[in-house]
Amino acid sequence: MNDQPNILFILPDQLRRDFLGCYGAEFINTPNIDGLAAGGVRYNKAISQFPICMPARAAMLTGLGAEETGVVDNGKWLRPDRREMGIQTWPELLRGNGYHTAAIGKMHFIPWDADEGFQERIASEDKRHYWIEDDYADALADRGLRKVHGREFDGYSEQKGACINPNPEDMLPDHWVADEAIAFLERQDGNTPFAAMIGFPSPHCPYDPKSEWLDAIDKAKLPRPLPETPGSRAQREAMIANFKQDWADLDYTDLTEEQIMVIRHHYAALVEAVDREVGRVLEALMSRDFARNTVVIFASDHGDFIGDYRLIGKGSFYAPAIDIPLIIKDLREGSSTGVVDAPVSLSDMFATLLGFAKVD
Image (cartoon, rainbow, N blue to C red; front, top):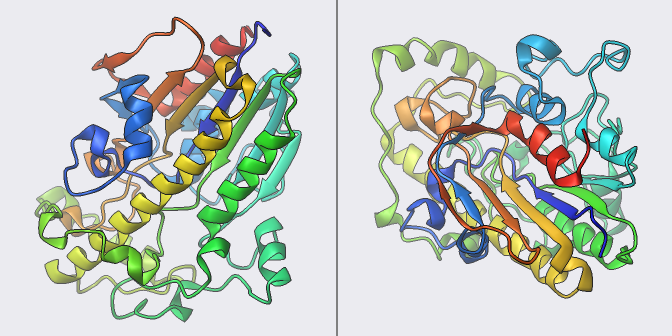
């Protein structure tokens, strides 16, 4: 058996940890993610130090903070001369040490098809990146479909981003990403270690499940939103202005608790859908002999307020935005299991992944 384990790093977009069963959510059904936690190590105090998509991902890739990379908002990315400055990413370091590296799904790089050390890129820069002609857009076109803005979905404007995706289930972005991840696993021969990052676009807004998924959620059990505070009230103006831009085209000036509960209902349905896709990927992994030499990591880039403090999205240093799931299941014989209550961060994944790969 190769001394370097395979690494399967699963990263849904904008998933808060208190919407998972293994973190105490009794209103949702996430058996596959819960199973990972039961057989691995669950971190109860994992945080995203930089709770915006691109700063969080840049920190995760490099092990450096936003103040060091310069990636402080979603309009910036790692500078092109970063290598000359000594800034490296874990995929390029693993690639230089015998790994086949792959990125499947949403990565949120600039430009969107940058490799950042991944030898293989299979891109689904959805859901908000409807104009990007990526691999997922090509797959939709082959079926006579196309990527669209959320406002084209039923219920989008009146339900504040909570809508219904009309596309066939097998062409929804998370299902397509899982299909591509499964195909990747089936291509591996077990002779060369791989490090694959799987980026699911959900449960990021728009909150667009299939209508039948909503029936599986008991709305009466969904948690009510946390009330406004003086601090959160001061942030609403910037949040409202952000979502009024064309990328979202939503007005949260008026946001009732009833509307918040609809958003939470749709968000929960998307979380359950992500769990199903995770289950499909894990089933494919476990069917391969190399599974017993694989480390599976499950995390998220940040959370989502989904109405807590009358806020939507992320970007503020409150628990719903910074509290993320982190589960590590080492499938190698004799690996540890349990629960860790010490604080850790998404930025720690850089050193953690290098450690598993035995790379300095």
